[in-house]
Length: 150
Image (cartoon, rainbow, N blue to C red):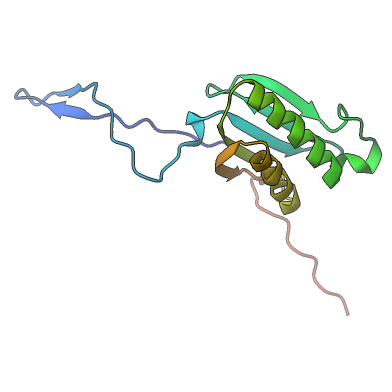
């Protein structure tokens, strides 16, 4: 499930009823932030590990860290210390590249991950402009809860 962006262009109408593309850009709405205009940090988890990926505006990967690279083994890979150390590494790397504002794209279901990571991004001086949750769903929807047997 991907987010598609539509680029809106301004057209001018001339006497011959033809529409001609004008180079004048549309004015931005106040308070509206497009997530593709800023560097992004993707946070996603596997069944066993946690991944943080830093990309630039174009979506090219600048660095990628996993909880196994940070030295965590077993069930500690998905714990809060792993999130803590990975978000520190990514934020230090982003500060070295002079990034001041970022958008965070979450592909995890656990709400604890984003709270811990956002605190550390804020502590290191990164301004989080937008948080996008892209939780993957199957095509036939979620699985129903089991019926209660008495």
